Image 1 (tube, helix red, strand yellow):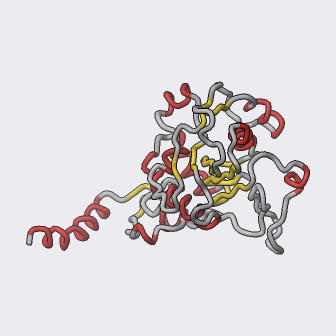
Image 2 (cartoon, rainbow, N blue to C red):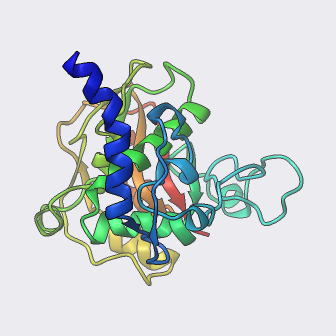
Image 3 (spheres, rainbow, N blue to C red):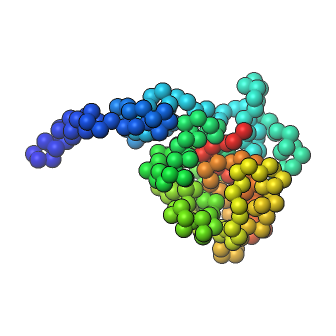
Amino acid sequence: MIDSCFISIKPWFASLQDALFPNKCLGCGELFQRERVRQSDAVDLSQSLSLYFCESCRRKWTAVSSPLCRRCGVPFKSREGEDHFCGRCIENNGAFTMARAVGVYDQSLRTAIQTLKFKAGVQLAKPLGRMLHQTFQRYWSPGKIDLIAPIPLHRRRFRQRGFNQAYLLIARWPGAGGEKIVRDLLVRQRATPPQTGLDRRQRRINIRNAFAVRRPGQSAGKRVLLVDDVLTTGATAEACAKVLLKDGASRVDVLTLARAL
């Protein structure tokens, strides 16, 4: 009886709480009344981040969709035609096999990622991780991946930030396809300056010899999925993929929340 009474007044109490303490949109900074979305429905930015962005700002994002590069996943400017290889991937096939992303790194998705990383907005990891998992299911069928690993932070950066955002995004994944999440598959053995502001060549040089496997042979014969927040030039993903292939991994793919253009 007590439980049923609590359930009946819970929506009323939540509505009162929203009226007294409206949310502040992370995008425009305006106060808004949050919409209640069932977890099973929270499959895109407009629903997943309904607690953090107003309705208008939730629409301000661009999903990555075809036509895109079959390998690196960059969407083509022309919205006509089928998926094909971009010029860079034709010239240099690289170490990882395929990269995919949820959306373009701009507008509200960019704000959400920067809030997670630089403003300790760890509450965003769950809804963003849910979006990422949906994209994973879209491009990789069950049984196609053996190990899922976050791109690691150097221990100094980890101490400063207090968390690795890439790991938080996958920490609650169900693993229904048999894949195993390995938090420390790779280690960042050398601290590097931020990649921001560097061109493609400078990024490759900056990240050279920065990564190593923590336990040699752990990825041998395995299909590995690397996860990060943003893919820009792909230099970091390439460096990690080379290390894993050298360790014996049979294939390395990449999944990120955002793709920078």
